Length: 129
Image 1 (cartoon, one colour):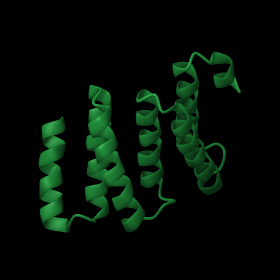
Image 2: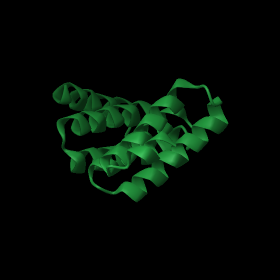
Image 3: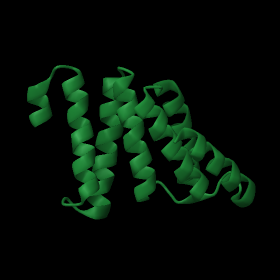
């Protein structure tokens, strides 16, 4: 999958430019693949680039931007940066609540990611709150 996404990224960059939202989306997908492969350093590098591109092209409150930021929170958790992960994920959840309402499915995902941060720290009772 990684090779296909990287090939797509090259095509998109050459045809649409480095700052196009489709490039940012593909970068985010590449970051997610690195996350799944356990390469958290590369995931963070790619996701951070995607986040910067998304903020400049589609804005800070776009669903795609928020999904990338949630993935960054998950990477931070896996890297042991629990406080930073919680801040990132809570900020995403707050924006999602404001933009989409409390019953939007992406909020459920983000709440699960927040729970994962607590579980990674053996704090199951906090994950319930």
